[in-house]
Amino acid sequence: MKNTDRKARTGSVRKGSRGGQVGSGGQGRQALEGHKPTPKAEDRPYHPAGKRKAAAERFTAAGGTRSGGGAGGGSYGNSEGSGDGGSRGAAPSRGYKGNASRGGTRGASQGAQRGTGNTGGGGASTRRAKQIDEHEIVTGRNSVVEALRAKIPANTLYIAARIEMDERVKEVLLMATSRNIPILEVMRPELDRLAGRDAVHQGLALKVPAYEYAHPMELLELTISRGHKPLFVALDGITDPRNLGAIIRSTAAFGGHGIIVPQRRSVGVTASAWKTSAGAAARTPVAMASNLTQTLKSLKEQGVFVLGLDGGGDVQLPELGQGFAERPIVIVVGSEGKGLSRLVTETCDAIVSIPISASTESLNAGIAVGVTLYEVSRLRAQIKAAKDAAKLAK
Picture (cartoon, rainbow, N blue to C red):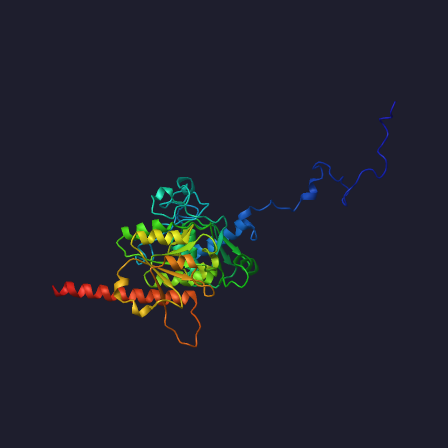
């Protein structure tokens, strides 16, 4: 029989420095004296919720007001009532993947509503726009302002701690707060990591869902339905996102209605392209063709003049005259090294060269497109002026 009266062996019970047993079930409550309750997440300065609260307080102190809105806003496009005016009135609504609360013409289930991609001229219900399953980071004050003005769905706005305030930063905070976009204040090293190596973020970065491309034939139909004479730019083998950004910017500047990129062996709309476009990507739609050659043939069937750019072209750009400018046009440009592919070259209605100095071998794709767009814009302006003068003379 065991002896139940035997005391515990010396040293078998751990004791604290004040003599109380460790793990005594709360009997030594005096050990907790002086400790405060754990603060709420929003009251901790380094917690994301605390950073959001601090940013909101600074915004309110600057004169802003918070209003309701979806967590990421609506889909964006070139609506006539947008803050950027109606200069890009032919741009269709485009959206981003991963934001079910957004509106727009495509809706939340656009993938389920469309079948296999079709570069021909069939109905819109048979077309599917390509989506990239990665988020993009838009950096820089101008680019972030333009993206928010266009109501692009956004997941998060990152702002550098102790950022130098200016009108653009105040506007960004106002728009992000009014749309309930989460605002995170982060240190510069974290913002550098988000923006990527060598990116100049200027203290602002916007995380947006994956870009959804328009369909080329939808782009054509919508442009015509709004009373515009289509002017598109198609890229053949362009892989540099900075070239795409420059082309988007030139297209917006000279009255173009959209960009067409092939699905394979081509650059897409990336954060770098957004940065180079200086916000023009928010106003200029980009369509994706599963087969560029077939898409160009379909455009030709709809009366679009396919104009290829090549240094060894049959005719120089100034020799085209006003006749071709009166037609719907798609300008096709290849990479600086390889130029247009054989099949695309055979599809073009005309191959045009730009006269340059003999000391210069070739032009960058973005510059070549800009020169051609300017020439088309100039000729169309002359045609319009002549028609207006004729009306006044009657």
